[in-house]
Image (cartoon, rainbow, N blue to C red; front, side, top):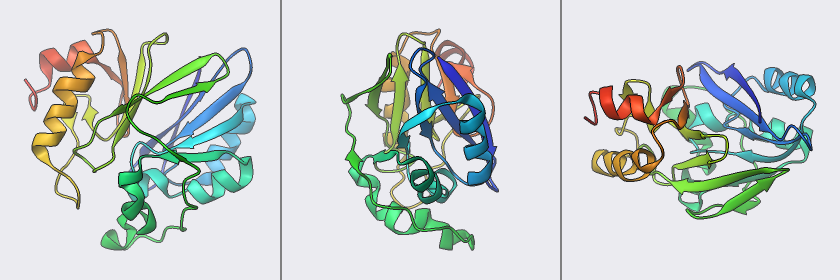
Length: 207
């Protein structure tokens, strides 16, 4: 697996480029800003981007959707419950942040869906709570899960924004993410990566 992290936007969002080493096909997960940085990383990795994936549609995870879709011709994919947030430009106005409008999604994703990108198989897991249509993209063979703002290293996502719900977030963590093998690496929307096993043992919010 090709993996590149690009830190973007005012909230230091982790935008991930994930690609197949054999076919050089890939995806962009959560292009939250700084499209120039993301496009430069795409060029450096030599990936052909098939999908732009939003784990959820807060502005710091979708702010560069329009630029990346336009530049790559990739399909935009997200959960339909995120559409109101996407159409509101990710709630950027709540924070006084200018954000370019995103194109509508080309693909609606639901739990159980499977995206094949070269030899990679991305399983779609529904992990709402931080937002109503939050998704995690899980690559079992690579022992990797990209979970947006659900579970962090020693932390969890906030639930005080519209559509957030604390109990739903905890269920997503305990019943979905913690059901993955302990050596699964969690690549969150902000901060360093961690593992399922480490967060089961040490995360104070869900112990």
